Length: 54
Image 1 (cartoon, one colour):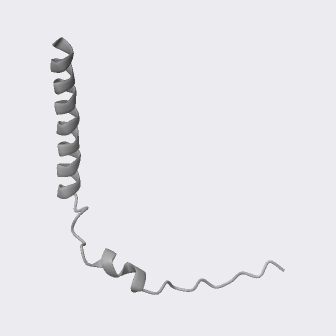
Image 2 (tube, rainbow, N blue to C red):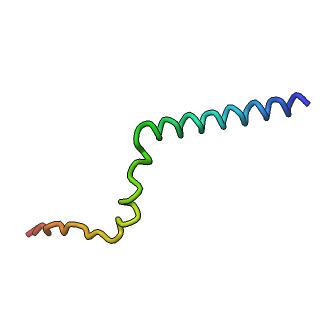
Image 3 (tube, rainbow, N blue to C red):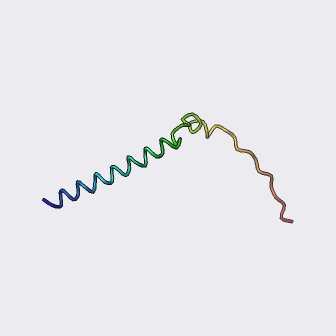
């Protein structure tokens, strides 16, 4: 029975850690831009000039 309490405590600790990481990411603006990722593949990349090694 002691192992059950230990596993519950461990899982609650892990869940609290994930919650803290999510709150940190939300406060730092990680989820602000929801438009650009959906059209990123449609935007053309800038062509880089080729270098001559000769």
